[in-house]
Length: 359
Image (tube, rainbow, N blue to C red):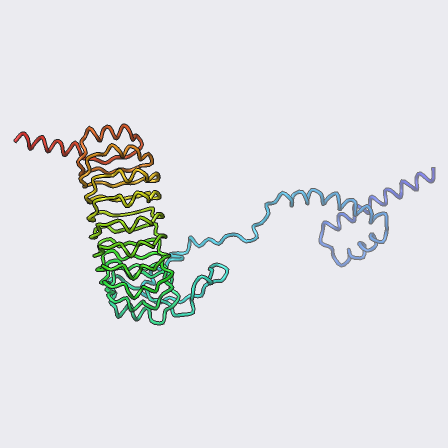
């Protein structure tokens, strides 16, 4: 009996000590409480009970913390609220020198050791161009279109240029750029250029835009087999023989030229877009091998027989306005090519013809 009472008293004392320890842990300890706390910790049974209570109480806290959303370590920066952020048009006409971040820009692709270039306005004089390009080297793209440039000697030393635009300038002689071995795109539309021999060795050239020039001979182009786009519109070109080896051509523009025969184009089966409008072409059978052709413009030609066109199953757009095809031929072709958009004005031409006959 005495042993039972002693055990019970010891248990009650342990629970009492646990309650005191829990209460003191939940409140801010004062100087006087520090001694009581040290006395409680001296009793090993009470200390073990405290640990048990603390661990059980910590479980719901850990669960609550686990349910909280994980914070974003590096949230994206939003500058949409900053007026005109990132706009540079207000600096037009000014010289801008800004450091480039290596991690953002592949600086190995450019030569930035030289001075920066002031933006040139359309109509810039040769003197302004010369001043802007002074000391510049390593250019990859140069657009001088619409300026008063006449002498390409100003840019003869920029032989690393890959894209050169000279449209609507006063350029006549392109000999100074004969050393542009890396050139891929050349735009000389609307210039006075007649002789293409200076670019006969430009084997890397993929696009040549020479429309509205004085070009007549295509002999210098016969070895430029990398060409994929060629614009010769509104020129005096007549003979397409030099183009027979350019089998990588995808787009060819011969609008308003003196071309009569397209026999030389028979092997250019990679063509997707061909413009023969305003030419004297009347036989389109050599084009039937073009199994990738999607756009074919034959408007304002003397073409009469359009039946062979039905074999071009890949055609998406066909322009036959101003040809000699009849409305019956057009209707039959529309039935044979239900998925091709055909432009024609046969009905209008026939109506006008009947009106003339009735007079």
